[in-house]
Length: 109
Image (cartoon, rainbow, N blue to C red):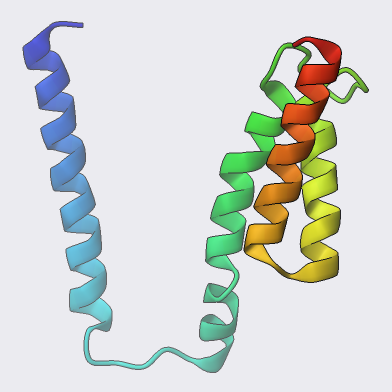
């Protein structure tokens, strides 16, 4: 990919993002959303994080897939249990990363 094609793609994506957000502000700027819509929108950040993290956990690392050799999957499961039990972001990060590093060190990955 040449430099000018790359910059063209970046500019087009930037303009598209701006227009999409601007249209939303223009359409909904002075109005309030119904309670049902607001209730659903509260789950958007968690859904976006899950959509980014789950494929990286399942398909990433030296042994992708749902196997016991997938250290990322095992660390992710530990992090999920800690998150569910403690509701602590820092505890979840520490447990997940600590488990991943420990498993990779033990298995030599």
